[in-house]
Length: 416
Image 1 (cartoon, one colour):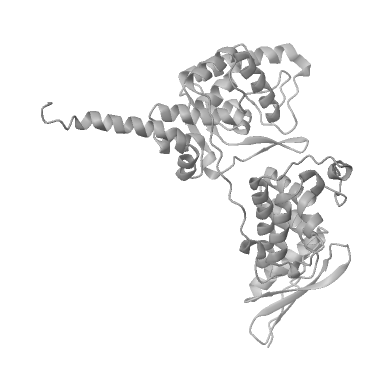
Image 2 (cartoon, one colour):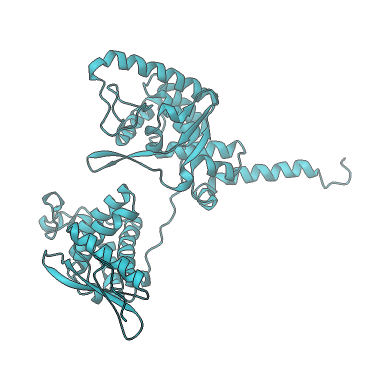
């Protein structure tokens, strides 16, 4: 006797080959409805897939099919799958790359007809094309239609190798999901190689430049922030998302638990970059004193602002580095502030992220081991630390060799 299906489970039947399949009506990207089948080795597996299809239909999300246009599949993947797996900043980047570059070039290709040759040709053309012209007549938004070559003035802005890698990552991730859903037999993007990215040599400030910069920064209202960035190597978003509950001035420690980023026009608080980025850091006493002074200054600013002190909606309570009216400090504004400080201190212009590199370089110069630096910076692996600061470590390695000579003594038998 055939097993009766559960209430609301949908149409699930057993095939002659022993597998199960189910059917449900779903939305196409064009808004029409069609019958879609899912398959599995067990009844429970098919029931889960069917429930997922039905939930997407209730939400009005289109389901994917192997014959749909690749551009439509990208739309589906970015709307239904990617938000569950990617951080907001990464998702925003993937959406922009898809809209500006991938969909105009490959969007009309059928998903099950996309070949390695199509991907390879697209990446080759993309690598040699002008970025503005790539945002041409097929662009979906008016602000993207900047076709400089059409008027005979090519800006010659070519994509970097890193941008090509990001484009490839979008293709690879989207097609991998299509494989999981059994829409395609292979991920053609994995077959195509991408250009290697030559690592850029880190150029941190040296100790003398840091002292000059901090001397000028003492009069800045965010002096404690600049000192903290140089001393602990925090990422920009990590430092601006700190609350007073994250900082223990008595023990001189702070906990990194969140970050803040600008996504389009909003400041979004989220989790740090990697699991290792959630960490506890020991803070130098000079930073402790600066933070204590900053806390007192913040209280004075609160009293002066009065009713104008209005925290940004969604920000955590007790944010450390706020604006003069209690709002979130925009991460992008820090680079402008640092540019002015560098100019006044007469040191070369650096980015806020370069202060993170500066912290690591100063620690290495003091003989701090790479493992400790990895934990301080929140790198995911020690390999990242060693690769990023390999050139800086040469001085440390030379000093270690010299100390070994001193320890072993002279090889001249006449010398004791």
